[in-house]
Length: 156
Image 1: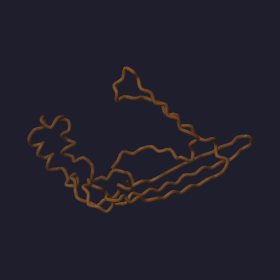
Image 2: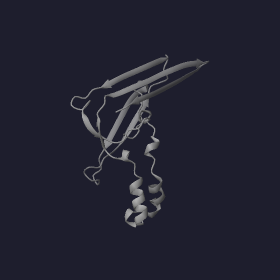
Image 3: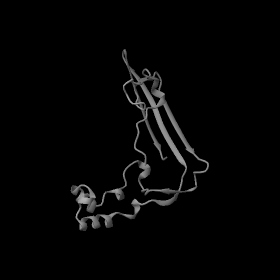
Image 4: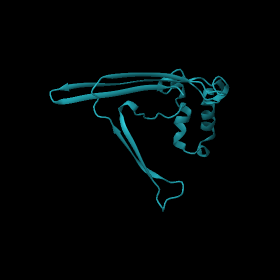
């Protein structure tokens, strides 16, 4: 599973500026820059947006692939308890490098590794996404208030 990444709903963006620079004394593959993200002003209307989609990739979707263990709760983005580090490995971690582990502990650690840590044959599925975002505006006297929220799901 890919690491979680933060996303900003496009509906609340006014503009994004990227200023990239390279320094003369830096290696050729180094770069630096600044990203300025400016949001829109408070919305003057209430909105609700729902986006759903799926993607079929020719030559990949439905084809046999090598894949790692997938658990029942992976679609939630939470860790499956089956991936918990076995006690024999976690308990011996204080030995440091495997070369320093006593033979008995090394064998126990190897035997405790579940089979779902291996690569298995599977089928590449269809990518899907679901996104819900909205804004809410209200006024109290001379003061304007607004809230925007977004949540989404992707399975790729």
